[in-house]
Image (tube, rainbow, N blue to C red; front, side, top):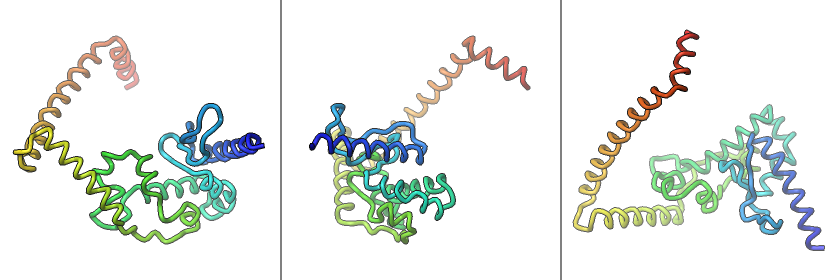
Length: 214
């Protein structure tokens, strides 16, 4: 009986997934933690590595899709509004210069999925689509703790690399010099690669076609 109920749930989830992928114009998706043998959670689904929806959020969208289309004018407009919801809670919600969910250090150390799992939005998707006011989200103690831990790891990494006797400004100058040198190497490498490409038969044929067209 339990296996049959699980099969029914999975079939329902797949249909919601199909319709959500169509709405958001996504070509790839997978349910996080779901195993090939058909077991595992039906909790969060990854769409193209860009959007992450729970089954409940998909139900909010798909079950009331005619209502959302009436409100926003088209399916494309609904999808844009959902994208705005993602941009809102993955971006700067504080309304000022100090950001936490969108802090550059957190962007470097946490990928989009990690940020999603750590910081669910306080305006859920249904209320967003209903037009809930978008007041700036105040940073919490958890936000500040996350940022401090990342800052500590950054300092630890740099001190191990440049030794403890260096000041932070010494480290900054060293990094600036290394970035400049590496940038110059990359620019030189790019120029050399471009020149090699120009010598290929395929490029010469392409250049001929362009010239003939002009």
